Image 1 (cartoon, rainbow, N blue to C red):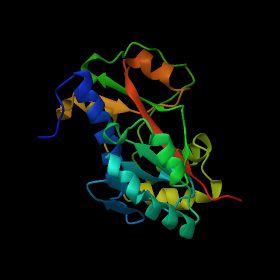
Image 2 (image 1 turned 30 degrees about the vertical axis):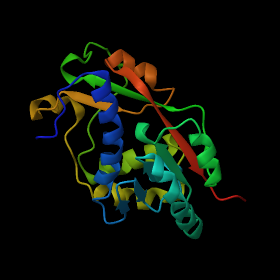
Image 3 (image 1 turned 180 degrees about the horizontal axis):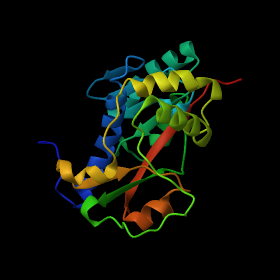
Length: 219
């Protein structure tokens, strides 16, 4: 519990949001279907699922760009697209040019970073009467979740078995509402543009953006 964040300053939350993104992929790497490689410059994660969000590299420092080419070559050999996240410590005025030099596409539309005080979440929002929300707690509900995630995130439908095997290897964790009782006070996430309004109504606020690049095999 020593790593629980209690500092709500913008600087601390921005750092925590970037760190949590890396730790999310470390968490996924508990599955035996995942390959994780880390050094002081970058974190690299390969799941084998042919979608950029499931194969990523996180650049930690400006010198990270010197080692991206190796990831590009690995992706080419495995025919896997991947996403490259650019941390604040790796940001520079020419980061887009550096990504292009590595064979990646750089994007101006960055991903939002949001955080919320778990003790101040808006729990008075009334959901539609025909909506039921329940945690994934067994294989049957996990299977439903995987099928929904494939459609919602645009993953190949034929990746259902691989996705199921990946997440079943992680077990079933407690939902967000149980986190305060465990000592956690802050939640962070990276929403899509479609989802930002939903999270704001719950109580999440914006804390900067994460830049990214994309590599896909040319056809």
